[in-house]
Each structure stands twice: as C-alpha cells, then as structure tokens.
Amino acid sequence: MRRVTILGATGSIGQNTLDLIRRAPKGSYQVVALTGGRNIAQLAADARAFGAELAVTAHDDLLVPLRAALAGSGVEVAAGAAALIEAAQRPADWTMSAIVGVAGLAPGLAALENGGTLALANKESLVTAGPLLMACAQATGARILPVDSEHSAIFQALTGEDIATARRVIITASGGAFRDWPLKRMRAATVAQASSHPNWAMGQRITIDSASMFNKALEVIEAKEFFGFRPEQIEVVIHPQSIIHALIGFCDGGLMAHVGPPDMRHAIGYALNWPTRRDLPVEALDLATIGRLDFAAPDPARYPALGLAWQVMAVGGLTGAVFNAAKERALDHFIAGHIGFMAMADLVQSALDGLAGHPELAVSEITLERVQSVDHVTRQHMDMQVGRRAG
Picture 1: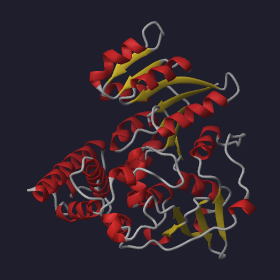
Picture 2 (picture 1 turned 90 degrees about the vertical axis):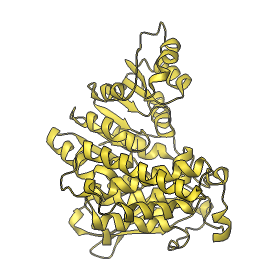
Picture 3 (picture 1 turned 90 degrees about the horizontal axis):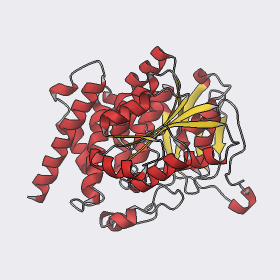
C-alpha cells in the first residue's frame, strides 16, 4: 500500500489525482494528508471519503468551519502556513505538489526532506528555486517526477535514451483562448473571456496564464531547470489540437513525440504509477477522426510573455523569483480589473528591468528565505507600478 499526500487537493490537479485513487483497486493507496484553500466543503468531503489522517486549510480563519465539517470523523484538522508544512512533512511514499503559485515551494521542499517521491505539478517551484529543489532531492534521495503534461511528455520521451543525444526539446502550446483573435480585440479581452480554454479543463488562473502564454513561459524555464537543457535547445510551437505535448529531437535528426488526449489524468497517472504503467480512464485517440495536426510559430506580438522566459534564463539566479512574483501579481490585478489583458506582460517586463540591480538579487546561493524575500519585494514593486498607472 502506497501512502499518499496531496498538497492542493481541492484544485483541478488534486481532484484528478483523487479520481485516480478512487478508481484504483482497493488497498492500493492510503491517504495521509489533504490540503486545500477556501473550498472547505470539498476538502472535508474528500478527507472523509478517503479516510485521510489530516486535513489542512491554508487559511487560519477557516479552521473553525473545517473542524465543524469534520467533527466526529476522526480526521485531524489544522490551518495556516505552518500546518501546510506539517502536512508535507508527514511520512508519505508519494506526494502530489499541486498548490498554485510560489506558495507551493515551501511545502514541496518539506515533502522532499522525507526522501519519497514528489509529483511536481507546481511549476513555480522550479522557476523560482530550481537549483534548491534539485539539490534537496539529491541530498535526501528523493525523486521528483514531472506532472505538467509537457514535462511528463519530455520525461517519457527520454525514457531509455541518453539525454546527451538530445539536441532540442519542442514544447507545444494550444495558443489559449485568444489564439485566433486580432491583437486589438485581445487588448480589450475580459477576465471571463480569458478564463475559457479551448482544450483543457483547468482552474481560472492557469487558464488565463495559458491565454497570455505566461504558463508556457514558466514551462520553458521549468524544462531548463528539471532536465538541464540549455535555453537555445528549447523551442515552443503552437499546436491547436493539444494532442502532441512535447517532442525531443535527437542527434540523428529523429524526433520522439509524446501523443495523447488533453487529459491531465494521463500525466498524473503516469507519475502515480511510475515506474510501471497501468490502465487509466483516458480517451483512446482516434487519429482518423482527428484528421490533422497543425503547428505554427508563436507570434511575439501576440504572446510577449513568452519571450521573457529566455531573458530570465539568460540572467539566472533569483530572476526566476522576480518573474514569477511579477506574473502572479499582474494576474491578480487583471482579475481585479485594474489593468488590461495585454498590460500584464508590460508590467512583468518593467519589474524585470526595474529590479535588475536590486541588492536582493546580488547573491549566488538560492535559499527559501531569499526566494521569499525577492517575492515580497517584487509584489510591492508591482503594486506601486499599478498604482502609478491608476494615478
């Protein structure tokens, strides 16, 4: 029986993970801890249904409602940032890291200290602190498995191959909700319009990030940090069908592609069952029905966020923490109606330029505390920038 913890259990990745556990043969998994945000009803229902030892909400003010929802269940209840770390530290064989944003970094690091397997859906951890995360895994003997569909595809395409023979990695992108919109219309895009994805069923924030291509920019940096690819080896191509998730180009000119339906349960299930493969409840592709696969180069004017990834990789260090914090705060302001859709990339570029000489970035060693400090400074910078625009 594999002991499993899910950090971010109430989000789309967490819910898909629980769906796979629910469908598995009885006795395959024991749920240790589930954590969530403000969806107390879902968190409590899942904790009861799966017999979790511990249920944690990230919000201190929701401890009482969570305790009430789980009264008489025997499930331990806790709340707050320290409780998230405690949940991650509980002995588990396999931990899903699916907390959205940089908030997932500290719990993910705590889970790695156990020496088990960390299924990483939180791409921000590698973007902000890739060297720290990988060093922690090496020191404790833990294993990190990618759960992003693109990085799971890269991982699978490289299985049995010598990574030294890989010359290029091509990450595909659907193009998001606005891939066929003229630029003028994109500038006036609403939050509701940006929150609808043509292929994937995801949460609001990642769906908007897909429309702006910030999500793909994070994935480019993640590919460098996880696999060690050089920036010049990484390419992005628009692929509207979202059937091919990534391709590896080898020294002999061959391309190895990972092909599958746009269903996150494949990547999750691969990580959950690794190193074996097991039946998964995903669609069997009918290539004749699909008929065609299209590819196009991303338009820099339409997706300015994408180009920022190479700027971040060129500078390195804590620049990834600046980029991620600026991206998260720009998204907050767009959702709140303070800025337009296309202004997000402008503001992130401004943060990268404005903080380039900041003393917080003039360090060689990446630590959790330094990432958190840079994150705080960047968010303050972004809020001041938005305030000046409003004024």
